[in-house]
Length: 147
Image 1 (tube, helix red, strand yellow):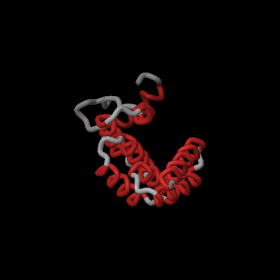
Image 2 (image 1 turned 180 degrees about the vertical axis):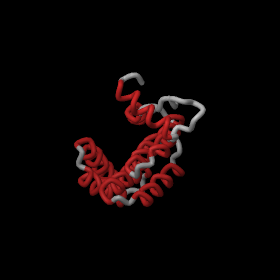
Image 3 (image 1 turned 90 degrees about the vertical axis):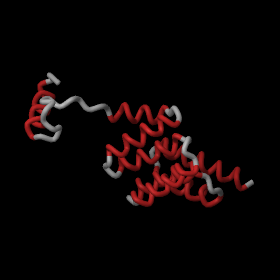
Image 4 (image 1 turned 135 degrees about the horizontal axis):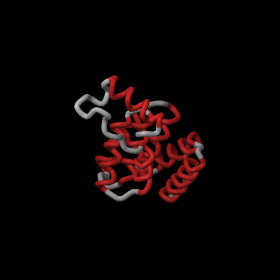
């Protein structure tokens, strides 16, 4: 009976996330995780904690624990990647998203990677990407529509 309640709360949280109501989702995921120790509930709860409370390190730890328990569940990688994006760690997010895709095909991860896009090669290849010349040329050529 309690497992059914936890599942109902989890789906209520997913619906709230879809509607953009992270606070309602947070409450639902917290209750579901208290009822049943399920790594999937934990990673969604971790995302909500990161988004609503800004507790990124706690959220990352929760997701990493869930990944250790279920390494082939791509939803864990998706939530961890979104937490890294919230923490403004784009490179880590991309790395985690790619790892999730290697484990299991996931449309949400693919969409997120497509949204992030890929970087173009530096204008002057023998200079580093963050060289001021490359940066300025990239900005100017981008605004002109040449690149």
